[in-house]
Amino acid sequence: MPSIRFSVTGRVQGVGFRMFTRRQADALGLVGWVRNVSDGSVEGCAEGSCDAIDALVETLHQGPVAAKVTEVTIEDTQTTRFENFRIVR
Image (cartoon, rainbow, N blue to C red; front, side, top):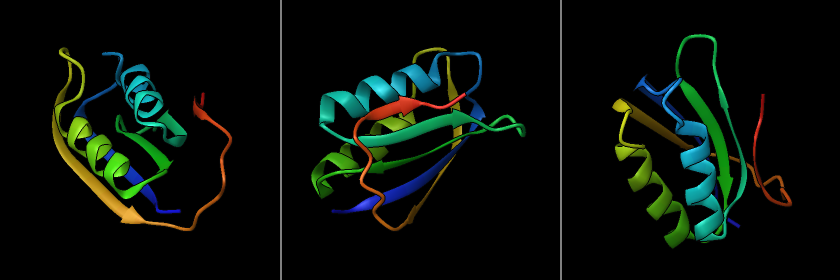
C-alpha cells in the first residue's frame, strides 16, 4: 500500500491544521498520523490508495481557512500498517 511522509510549513499551528488533516484523511479512507513540530511546522504520515494520497496532498496545500501554507514536502516511505488516522500530541 502506498505510504507518504509529509511536512507542512507556514502558519499551520493554532489554526486547526491537525484536525483538518485528520478529517480529510478519514474522509479519504487513509490511515496514519499528524502532529505539530517544535519548529512551527506540521508533519505526518499517510497510507492508502494512490488517488486518496494525491487528494490529501492537494488539500494539504490549501489547509483550513485560517492557515497560510508556504511549503508542503512529500516523500515516499515504508508502509507501517496503521489502523486509523490519529492526531499525535
